[in-house]
Image 1 (tube, rainbow, N blue to C red):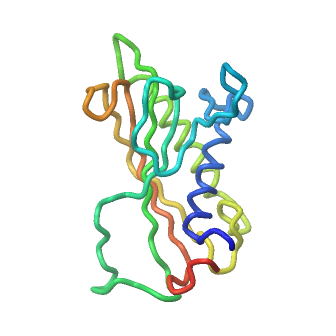
Image 2 (image 1 turned 180 degrees about the horizontal axis):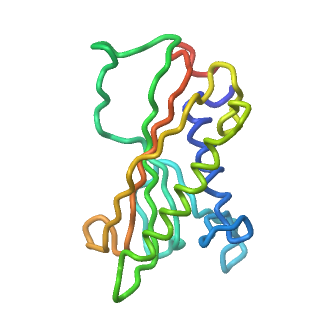
Length: 176
């Protein structure tokens, strides 16, 4: 059975973020790598909120935005329709001792740049998911928020970048 469409979209966003490497013109490296004992490891995760000292820095997590969605025109759209899929890209970086947020600004700029490149596809095949429904019709990038380490959310500096994807989909056939 194929993945549900929204999972395919989340995976495509993660693949876009994994393309952030110095070889591709970025300052950071969010690509998969081999750890010190020879195991494959990731720097980009989906749906993960808890991290520890053994996780790589920098790293990213793609999460669904938990804030409630406002109904469009007074009702929640379902069936074959244009819907919004709101995500948050959360990034963690080693902070600078004197200016803890500086590395977070640089990393979020790399994330935003990669997402902007993904939305500039000329054949409307955004994220490589096709141009016929179900598909991603648009990508909107919100204002990033940068936070210093606080030992509540994170022991290192972090940032959040809101991303809203406009989807053409049929909610009644999620595997299409």
